[in-house]
Image (cartoon, rainbow, N blue to C red; front, side):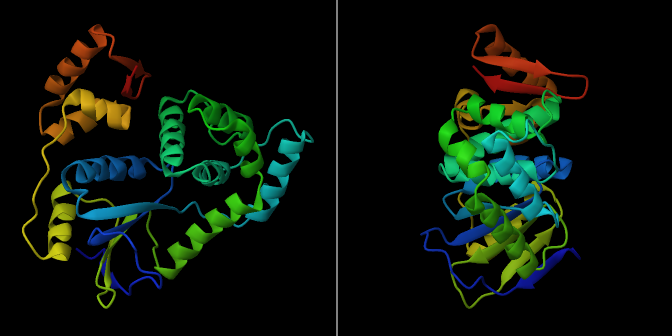
Length: 268
């Protein structure tokens, strides 16, 4: 695997008790990011007792200060709306100021709209609507979206990307709890078994797999899933996964959202 490299530990080691920490570098709207996140969801379900993780947003743009000033104009009412590829990343960082769970809900909803093409997620107005959909504090979000703190948080992610010499997105950098050991950078997306093997190498012992949740529990945790994700998590055929999901749709536990390209299943 030519896309795996050793890296020095970050200067501030994790204070969490789990022996491995993952830095997951993503462009929120990149199609390969969705494949990475599906893999990461399964890794969480089976092995999250071994690792903690954080997303590092990696949308590369050089006009961040200009965009931030224009967002402030929107907040003050000077402009009706703007669109820009950097806006989803700044919005995610603004949501993160309300907590990690709020940020994940917001990221998932942005990706849902991008996948289904139901909103222009590069639009300032649409990103405000999405914040309302996931029940963020709108007064806080409006202020934070145009704040120096959200822009700086995004700039910090780009700095981490440069420091760890991450040139391909998505990528994952694995760090062990031993700060003397180098991190392991895995560029691109591989099969689930590759990440499972790397985790075992980092732990240096046989991994103990947690039992998978029921389908209802899975939907409660992740809220929106594709048929392919469900099939991959449970290692079943897509036809079997779709049949089980349709049962829950008839029971009014989930709803099916679809367009010409993709079908998503969302908990009601």
